[in-house]
Image (cartoon, rainbow, N blue to C red; front, top):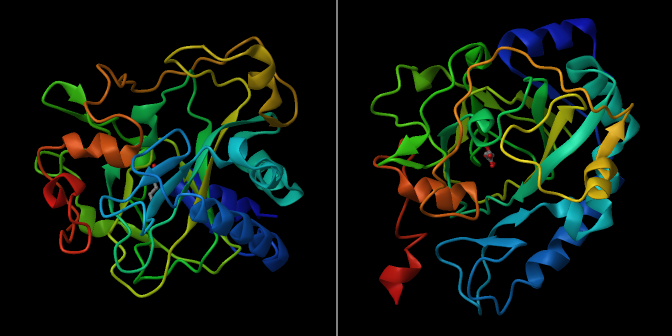
Length: 299
Ligand SMILES: O=C(O)CCC(=O)C(=O)O
């Protein structure tokens, strides 16, 4: 599915976009399930284990910011994590033995969809080696205007930045002290059915979606089967093994020297990256409060 040159681009820059990874039929099937899930958020008055809600969500006017771990919520999202195209691309990027590590759907709805501050996924879930990446399945066209993923090319070879604020994990890099020039970020765009692949250590973020078009991105986190999460092991064994996408599992972690910081003490605002990042001292991306007025303020 990808050439050696594309794999080389990924290894050099820390990201890659591949068109037509999913057919339009597969995308429509996922969109239809997502529509049903969003409708079920009507009546909710707070985040829960499935839904992360926009600050302006109300039970009558549901505004879902994220579906958490969609592959646990509906079988279609588990099935779509291991299509032949995905396995083929992952084989080139992280090797033949692959495990699904996590996932989410970031809705980023037209007019108000929240920004995501600069961060490295590695700061959330360091592993014994960094053959770990995120797949961004474009369930909508991702354009210059609707809050595309922004990635700092080559940053996956650099340090792991401080993601803490006031002594707590905050899931974001302080833009006031970070030496990176964020104006050099690559803007990742593509058509519905395309996928982005970004390295777990690549610095990335995205703007608020003030355009008139939704930007729904289904994100899968995939890891080489010999990369073990350093935070803990607290899940039933069968569940862990059921997340294999391709190849063989192993009890022998491959340990590679990488810059690691642990995400402790836990974020003051827990539950999702959006919540974690409320703990930041300062933000990089503008956040229009008229569209996303805080629930507490409105009460
Ligand atoms: O949806 C986005 O634009 C950013 C996604 C991301 O980095 C995350 O959710 O961790």
